[in-house]
Image (tube, rainbow, N blue to C red):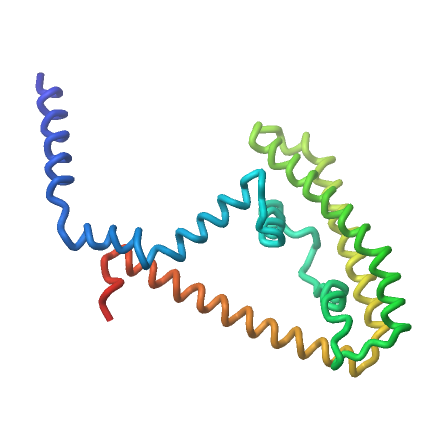
Length: 214
């Protein structure tokens, strides 16, 4: 009898609390779902679209997928080959026909190899995660983990060989130009990250009904 009364009291109190939500909290919830939450809503939508079978987000979708299984390399290395592919006709870079031919030849060999390694690394990483979910003993996963280590080492060596090959084709002036471009890109990325953090802070203020205060 006492338990029933206690449960009834708790239920009544909860109902009353919901009925008498302060106007400020209600405004905060409205703000979160409105203007201030727009950026966060868009972000969630993009993630949802990426997971959908009919993914049309292109590179962003692939990037999210790679993050899920970690980097395919042992350490972070510049993607000079991809960078040069996009700026092959840059007048400031001024690649000669001979350089373009050599770069295309190297790209034809290296890029399919890296693509295959990335796929193998993704599948091996996935297998380890699935085994972990099934509580497979660590010792039983040793061979798969060693396979992953070998694949990542091979991918890193392939990338280093590719970077070395690109550097041997370009002149000192061209390499310096690319270095400056990469430095400028890093600065732009840093600014974008800071802007993203600023938006996240604004969204957090919105949750506490302070988005309209200055």
